[in-house]
Structure formats: C-alpha cells, structure tokens
Image 1 (cartoon, rainbow, N blue to C red):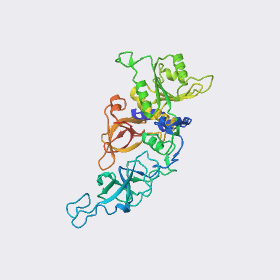
Image 2: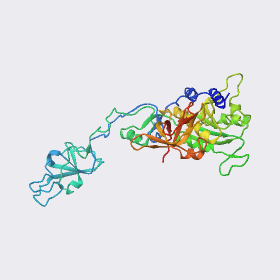
Image 3: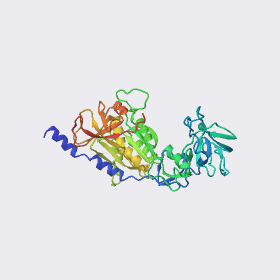
Image 4: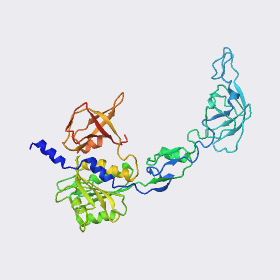
Amino acid sequence: MTATAGAEAAANELTPLADYLGSVLRRLRALPPLDLDLTQAYGNVLAEDVVAPHSYPAFDQAAIDGYAARWEDISGAGRAAAGGGGGYGPSRLGDPRPVRLNVVGDLGAASWRPVRLTPGACFSVAAGSPLPIAADVVVPVEWTDQGMAAVEIFRTPKRGYGLRRAGEELPAGTLLARSGSYISPALVAVFAATGIGHVVVRPSPRVVIVATGDELVDVGRASQPGQVVDVNSHALTAAAAEVGALAYRVGICDDDPEGLRGLLEDQTLRADLIITTGGTGAGPGDMIRRVLSRRDGGRASPVTFMEVALYPGSALGFGTVGAEEVPVVCLPGEPGAALIGFEVLARPAIQLLAGAEPVFRPSVRAHLLETVSSPVGLREFRPAHVAERRGGGYTVQPLRGGPYTLSGLAEANGLVVLGERVTSAAAGSTVDVLLLDRRR
C-alpha cells in the first residue's frame, strides 16, 4: 500500500465534519426565553417577533428649525420679477418682493397645546415640535430674515419640506424585527421610539472555560521545559465573549481525575455550556477523555469523543455533564487547533443556545492568490486575508504557517475552507472562505 493510499484509508475512518456537527447541534436547544427591560436587552437575541404598538413619528412634527406655514401663503416667494436676481434673497435689479407673514407664536419640542394656522400667519418652530394644524411646510431659518413678530421669506420650499408626518417612518403594526434577530443599539432605538419598554429574548448563554493539564502555568511568564503557558483559557474566553456569551474563565485544572470531575460538577450550577481544552486524545495522559468517557454502571458515556475529519485538531468531544445535563464541548490543547475547534464546533453551539440565526458565520467565494496543499481526507480551515475586488467579488491570500500558527490567526479576517477531497488548490481557483467578525 502506498503512503497516499494509507493516508486515504486512515481518513476514511474519520467521522465527516458535517455529520459530526449536525449530530451535535441536533442535541442542543435554545435557552428558555425571558422578559427583559429594554435597557438590558442589547446583545441578546429576540425570542419572538416584535411589532410596533405605536407609530413613529407619533405626531406631525417639524424636522428642522424654521417657520411652519401654509404652502399657499408662501408659494410666490423667491420668484424674480423682470430683471430679478433668482429668488435667494433681495436682488439688486427688480427685486421680487419677499412674502411677509405674521409670526403668531413659538413652538418647541415640549409644546403640547394644539394650535391652528390661519391665512397669512406662521409659527416659529424648533426641530421636533408638534406641527400646527393646517401647516404643510417648514421654511428653513436661513431662507428668511429671521424675523420675530413678522418674517420675510425669500425662497419657497416644496410642499411638505421640513416636516415629518405621523407614522411616516414606522406605522403602528409594522414588523420591527423577527425572532432570532440580534438586538443592536439601533434596534433598541427603534423599539423605544415606537413605545416598547420590554422585549422577550433568549438570555446570553453562560459559558465556562476550563483548561486542563499538569504542564499548564498561568500567563505572565515564559514557557520552559515541563511548563506551558495557558493560552487557551484566555483565548477561548475572549472568543466566547465575542459571540455574545457571558464568558467565565475558571483557569487551569490539573490532571487529577477526582479534582477534574468535581470542578466540572460545580460549574454545572452556573453554566449553560462548558468548554474544556486539552486531553481529548487517546494517550495515557489525556485525562479529560479518560474521565468524561467512562461508563457509569454500564450506562453509555455522557460524553463521546470522536476523531473527526478536521484539520487542525481532529479529536473532539461532546456530551453532557452533571445532574442538570449541561452541554460540554471538549477541544484539543494545541492553541491553534483549539481556536479552530471553537470556530467549527463551540461557536455554532453558543449561537444555537442563544437562539441566533444563522448559527454559522457568513461565507463568500473568493479567488485564491496562492497555490496551497491540504491533507487528504480532512476538511482544513486555514487562516487567510480576504479582500473585496474592485468591480465585485473577493480575493483571498492564505497566511504563512498554516492553521497552527497563532500569528496567522491573529492577522486573519477569514478562514479558507478546503474540503476533504482537496489535496491541492491552485492559484486562481475559487474557494470558500468563512468571514471572521473582526472589528478593524
């Protein structure tokens, strides 16, 4: 058997990533909904459609500072007589007489008494103030002489200029957002403007991150033989927070079976999802796998570990722990593999618990700028830089070092996805790219 044939045979024994991911997500359910005050709703996901109970604007109002008038009273302003100057103000030749109106009152945003315009009169209005009855135009201040008792208008705006009608933007009954929508600051503004003070949401999942291994030491020092700085619990806590979870870093747990079992049991009291890193392999020191895959009284193990057709980091685990059956995702200990595993498995799980739609990152098709090779039989996720092309479409540049390099992951704004049957992708070919949500 050739080396290539041997590699293909070994790859055929792996669980396809799509099958594994589908089996995991089918076991998860969105968290029960709760009613939140609007001030606390940002960052959550709606659990039901939201319909506007009231119109926005709620009443006819001035959109600018100026003079609210009847268009019929000012329609002649700015029309030059013979030899006139065009209507933007007094002209030197044949000056058209500006329209003169009596200013019968001032209205501000706090005005509440209804008032009515009569022919030949206007009101001085501030932006946001209620519009007088019969007013159908607001003349900007700069198109007038800014008079107080009477005002001269040099230019006629179009009918309807400078005002907003009730319900013009959002009539009552408008669908404001669908279930599964992320509540952004702008959506909070829309809810508030239409009279909504509470919304029903899925709570942000509480995610606990645990790093395991006798070799781990905390940050603030350099790694040395026998000691490895704990990168993963810090990175994965940040990754979970980026998704919108309430992320809690427990820190480092030694490879002590009873201590590990007790720590995980304790965390089920405050977690909707537990993420562990390290110990997912089949070696004698892979304690997470030994502890969580152990059968209890002949019953099936609550956590199943599989070799998945994923590169990097094929050894993954999923199941539940504790009496509450809290979901647990077990990721590899190598930092690059842990971050890719988070993107592929943990992130969709968090999105599903939060009720978010879609659960996967957006993707695009892009032209590859450099030829790359990929392991046979594995679905590879490679850090890359994706850019929009002038005229449309995307290009993608794989970053040096491949998937395991932390520097590449830090620089990447996308992940090139190379399928199980792809062993080489030529420059100029089209590939799938997951877009990372990097705020740059």
